[in-house]
Picture (cartoon, rainbow, N blue to C red):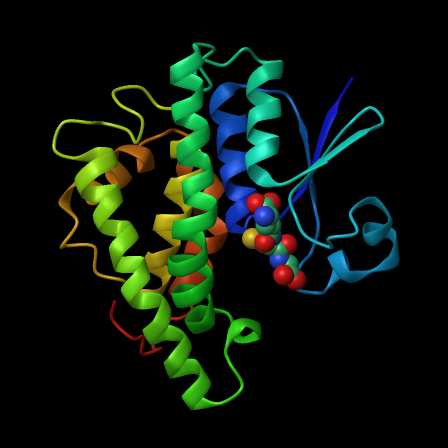
Length: 226
Ligand SMILES: N[C@@H](CCC(=O)N[C@@H](CS)C(=O)NCC(=O)O)C(=O)O
């Protein structure tokens, strides 16, 4: 039974799923939902995902939203070592998946990067934009400190230790999107090392080609530093 994934390469949540599926050799059909033309807001997509968000997985009659749930589902279908079965090992991966989604994603991605790189996320007034960026910047720095100093530290290759897990697949695209706003990660050497490792995955470049192209189109924009 074919696994269909509705996604778009400009979507950070989609790229996590696309990268993991490609790296794991999980056969699936990627169906592009054009979020730029608003295809996800149309009635036919809303009928299958009332959130009107991507990614969405369909496997037979089973539908699943939420990138981190999709990652776990794909990993279980493939018995992937990226989602280990041991009680503590799996709990650690779950913890870090939740952390990326509820801490780093909220403040770094949605609160600081998206309002600067995506026009639809920009706040209506300059004052509102500045207040948003200021509020989320301080919290984003706090989470980056945790990621750099505690999850990775000087000794861990990946965010749960020495082996790549789903948490790396979910988290690396969130950190990498900061580069579209030319965030300086120099104060976070362990994050830079980890991101460089993730970028060496064979499927990173093809999965990130579209968003890298979008980032290049912002070359003349001025961004607020973190
Ligand atoms: N919590 C969801 C978030 C999904 C999400 O925010 N998707 C974005 C793209 S990264 C989207 O569909 N945006 C369309 C819109 O906001 O109109 C997940 O992890 O899958």
